[in-house]
Image 1 (cartoon, rainbow, N blue to C red):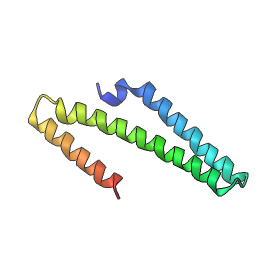
Image 2: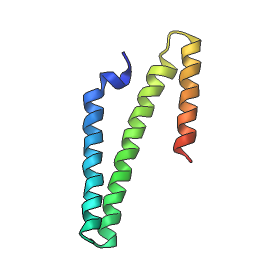
Image 3: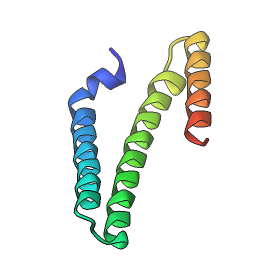
Image 4: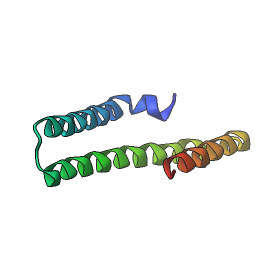
Length: 90
C-alpha cells in the first residue's frame, strides 16, 4: 500500500484547509481588502502548501528511497524525487 493511501484522510484534510485558505484570498480580493491583508492570506497559503509538500517529500524519501527492498525500486524512488525537486524549484 502506498504511503499516500495510508495517510489519505490526513492529506485530504490538509488539502481542504488549503482550499479554504485560497477561497479566503478570493473573498479578500472580491471585498477589496487592503494589500497587507491579502498578502498575509497569500503567505498563509504558501506556508500550508510548503508544509504539505515537505510532508509528501519526507514520506516519499522514507518509503521509496530509504526503505525499499531492492536497489531498482530505490533508484526509481530517487529519480522520481529528483524530478519533483527540479519541478518544485523552477
